[in-house]
Image 1 (cartoon, rainbow, N blue to C red):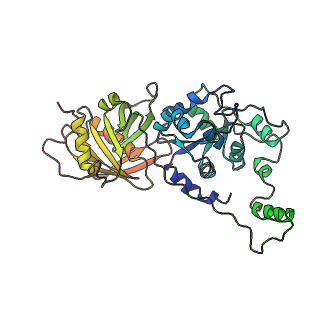
Image 2 (tube, rainbow, N blue to C red):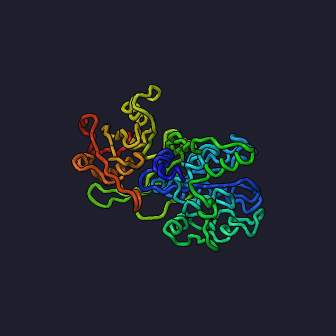
Image 3 (tube, one colour):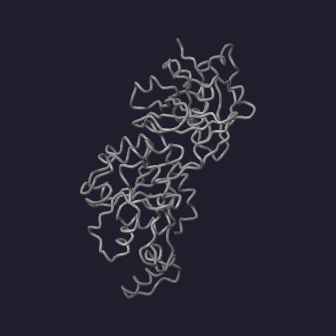
Length: 401
């Protein structure tokens, strides 16, 4: 509760962008948990669907797994099992030091009958039960009552409609009988340190220290940038002058639904070289002075020379901007006004603009407006880094022969 005022900091640490919703996957430790194999075992199919079905710029996903899961299987095995989801953008939260901050940051929790799901409900966060076995719970306990009433995840139905319905208020669980989860977690919120210390000193027969009982604040987790190396299928629509709608999906198993034109954008480190060779856009994240890749100017030129079918190469050098090179040789900087979306989304919007037969010069005065769903609208400036070469803009997306 003391950490609630710092929610936005915790969200930024997890690279949750403005307009995004953080979906937190939570599993306790038993065979019937979300990560267990004693029930329906929906997790293997659920994990990749989180990143494949939910638009990348509208949702951020993370997982909090009980420490015993890490201990029982080993960190290496956990990371192997979650590798595909992690390449799609799933964040793995530290099970000891980061779970409370992630819980505060979350917009919705997909969980089980463990205590973390109940804590989420006590904070007022919507909870969708992915596994809800009553085994091991006292039927008269508040947690059991909560599990009975909480909405259930339908594992084979589309995820987005279920999450949106829950987030918009439909299907949110009400406690079976008052009081609700928050009151049952603590009858004296904010007073636990003083009450517990008083009780402990009384038990050992000593007088309490005169200074007040205080708790360490929750530490701010390290910044964890989203790095999606799964190929992204991008659906775009031109809505007006300089206004482009972008929806990116990580490694979808079928063509995303919706009107618009589609293209493929891939991180340079994608595991699939064939998808990279045929990508319309290739990007990576880095710094402008990293000697391993060279300058953004050098790296973008190298990528386009190596991949003749690629139309745009872009290096994201900070949280709000990137350097992009067209096939015609023009080097430009795309910069979003803070707070900003992932600059790789700006590159896909820029691609859609050029693919429609328009030129980058049309954007230099007013920039672009990039829309990432109903909750995200971002103004992006388009600035040439180098002078235009003769013949360059006439065919900015024409692959090299």
